[in-house]
View 1 (spheres, rainbow, N blue to C red):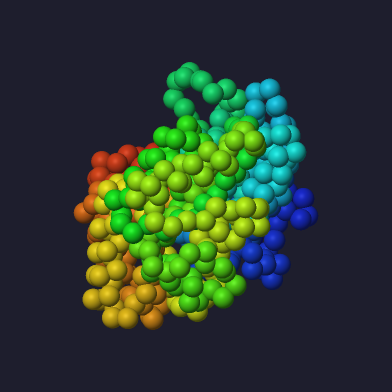
View 2: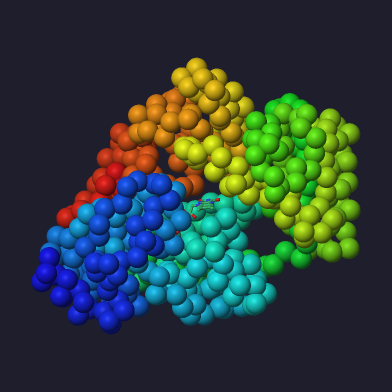
Length: 460
Ligand SMILES: Cc1cc2nc3c(=O)[nH]c(=O)nc-3n(C[C@H](O)[C@H](O)[C@H](O)COP(=O)(O)OP(=O)(O)OC[C@H]3O[C@@H](n4cnc5c(N)ncnc54)[C@H](O)[C@@H]3O)c2cc1C
């Protein structure tokens, strides 16, 4: 290792390599997703050429490499093992260009999402990828996990915002595919190999992102609904009447809402606790004079049709933040029921309520007194579950996994909607993918990374 460390040190400037006690907690803090080992070193390159040089050296030496962005991933994808070389993109954080005509942003992979939002906003656009970890998650991490978030229903997953990218393969080969056009069918679309492959096929170093016109208005409502059939019916009504302006549609089962009321004193639940489902929804528009009235008229129609029983509309940005905090800000409550296991799954909307009912029932049988909270991006077919069984052991985790993923498998859903597979869901990949699909994934991995040095033990 000594020779390799010396060669790696020669590939970067003095701040580009950390060893021993200089390796801070940032690189091993996995947010509880897998125990981290002790990396041999942390490489902090400043250019694609440096990333290439590092990977070539590691490839020649057969040394395993773990890519890291903001370390906000929720499945252990960035967790290093003993002796790994961590390759952090944190110093590759320049925004190279905004093209207001082509509506594109060219940026380094280490740019933090919130920074990219600010630059897009200053230029009069919106970068529509958005999620709670925006203050730390990086563009490279978002691309590598094909992250979702709250605006997927309007703008799609991260994949839909990536026009081009640059990646470095395991052997140091630089693949520059910085397409700026919406249309480019010249052969295979190689960028797709690196979107959502969690750093197992290559290191993303730069990207071309698609910007969108900035919405001029956001109208937000929080409603209570008493029967599940009305939830997708309300979604369909909004979708149809808003003419493409539906910006978010998030559903919370009553157990989650009641939990927020009981365990999150800093939040302000806007409705009485007598409904079975709660929805927070955003409408994005471009007409400040008319949008709010139109939104309220749609809610009135939904009420008249019996789709919603109660609701409030935000009258200010502060009220909007308060309504969204019910959905996003339950961290203080979660801390009171730790240890807990979190889930991110997808399934057809039609089976969601059965999933919720069966999950809660089966977990209660296995762990009497357990708490199972369900919420999620219903319009995207994506639910999250938070499960606390009073036991954080690996055995308990596996038992809850088997229960929930078993229901998902039988429903034809996916064990990962937006967070990826990492190490946490690796054993369950074939519960959502056919043998042939998994074998093609392995074939791609062998072809692009024959020595298996990139993010070992992750995904497949
Ligand atoms: C509070 C909170 C809310 C969240 N909300 C959402 C949500 O709504 N939707 C959602 O999808 N996710 C969500 N996440 C998960 C997380 O934010 C995303 O997975 C994000 O994309 C990770 O970005 P990162 O830069 O932190 O990547 P990291 O965590 O550092 O890495 C994630 C994976 O990508 C790989 N990787 C990182 N950078 C690169 C690169 N440049 N090239 C190749 N591989 C790389 C890593 O090896 C790892 O496998 C949330 C997380 C938190 C903590």
